[in-house]
Length: 297
Image (cartoon, rainbow, N blue to C red; front, top):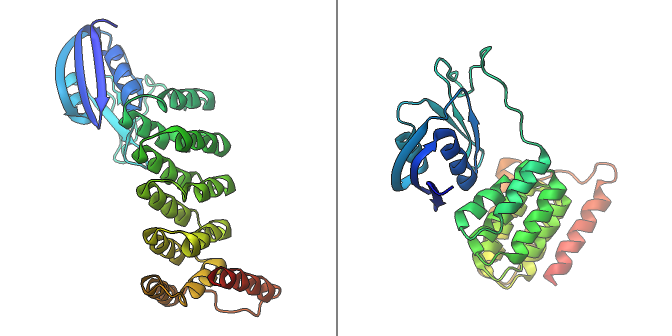
């Protein structure tokens, strides 16, 4: 559209609009900034506005003037949906729309639409757009989300975007996410490796614990090994305890002391498994102890 230019870069909004319907402007902003736009009533009157590099909500207020709107935010803190209200409607004390007879309920977009929206933005030049798209992966079915995250980790040269992909895998969850994060531990950028360790810690479970255990004993980066200890300390499973116990005997004094402190914290919190006498438990725990001790040797 010749009379409309919208740019959203690094969280800042720039707008140049001349005699463009307000609803068209808002949809263009939503497409660039990565949020859905829901419009109640008729807001098609032409608008002319111009500003540069404003924070998103400040720019929207400049654009909308006295028109009421509500911005909803997702778990990541990013703008998720903007609702432009018709006169006489509002939101309740919890920030939810007050539905009246003249207001319709807007359905969640179909999975195919969300996937198309995300995929189209994962290759854009603007880092901020790609990061928003990566965070939206949590809206997709886990297998689809992991596939797209794998493409980001393989193809995106920006470590900030790859780090966000690793962090998002921790929220997606599942064995496939854990397996992919295990591969990310070999990323050439330290910050991405750290995000992978944190994401494995968020996943929990034995599969993540084994990945963290391998990083603890085999990874050449001491910072990764120390972060692995922190992640294992938050994993309540028996496998994580076994790795920490084995690490408490390592020659590296810094890692050894960190492991001992982590074990103390687990003990104080009551998160360590206290008994090996449950039926079948002794054999399983002995196997984990052997696996961890073998890594030490």
